[in-house]
Each structure stands twice: as C-alpha cells, then as structure tokens.
Amino acid sequence: AGKSNAGAAYAFLRPAGTAVSPWTADGLMSRGIANDAMGQSVALSNTVDGALVGARFATSPAPESIANAGAAYVFDRNATVKWGFTDDFGVDPTISLGAAPAKAGDNFGWSVGVTGNIAIVGAPGRTVASSNQGAVYIYAVVKQQGDACTSNIQCQSGFCVDGFCCNTACGQIS
Image 1 (cartoon, one colour):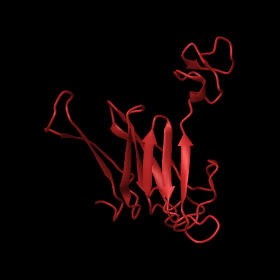
Image 2 (cartoon, one colour; image 1 turned 90 degrees about the horizontal axis):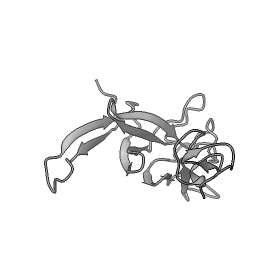
Image 3 (spheres, rainbow, N blue to C red; image 1 turned 60 degrees about the horizontal axis):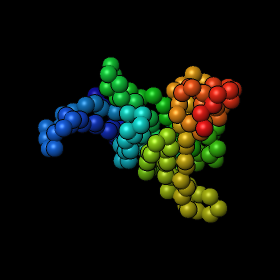
C-alpha cells in the first residue's frame, strides 16, 4: 500500500536514434514519505546521469520536524538499481549548506533545476526580511580527493592534477 500524497517521479527511456516512440518505462523515483508531494518539480542532468526531484511539502528531519519546510532529493541512474536515491538536501538546520534554518511553509523544492554541476532550488514561501519573499538556493557539486576531474573548480581542494582531484598543486590542470 502506498503512502498518501507521497508523490513520485517516473523516468522513461527512448532508444538512441529513434525520433518517435516507443518510450519505455525506465524506473520510479520515490521516497515513499506521506504528504511530501514529491515530483511536482523534476530536473535531469546529463553530466551525472541523475535527477533532482522537489518535495515541497516534506517535513524537515527530526528532531525539528518542521512541516512543509520542503526538500530536494537526488537520484542517480545506474545499471543495477536504475534510479536509486543517493542524497537529499533542504533548508535544514542539521545540514550546513549556508542556508537559514528551515521554517514551516518554506516549500523548498517547489522548483528545481540542474546545469552541469550546479543545482538550484526554489523556496517561494521563505521569509527573508518580511513575509514570503521567497528564496533561491544554489548548490555546487564538488568532487573529493581521487575523483576524476577536468578543471580545478570541480575539486573541493581546488587542485585537479592529471585528471584527478588531489591535495597539492603539483602539475595541476588549469
């Protein structure tokens, strides 16, 4: 039995070189959390073969458990699980993302977008100076030591050496 108003996102695949149908079901993305309303906003990324899915009514994690704070869920596509949940982020006081603590009605995840290694998430109910101006949060996916890279900006350390993120500048790629 499904959870009421949990929401989901469905992926479909069209074979390469096909101009029209047949589209075939490729997977289901869901967290199965009641009343999240997940799937109103979805963004795909060609660079990481994944999806960012908004859940504007998600409750922030315990112990705060703030109703309608919202969330954005990251799903990666791979050969074994098709579309597997890998990460989430939100206006959450337990995660340090430079965002203010979650408040009821933020609706983080109302809109989402992805380009390259940048994710953008809208929170139209966010109060900044007075009531409900809304906010936009921008996140950059940075790579860790040992991950493949093509430029310094992709690496947390700031150093891309011989195609891999490392801790030193020796032989860095500019």
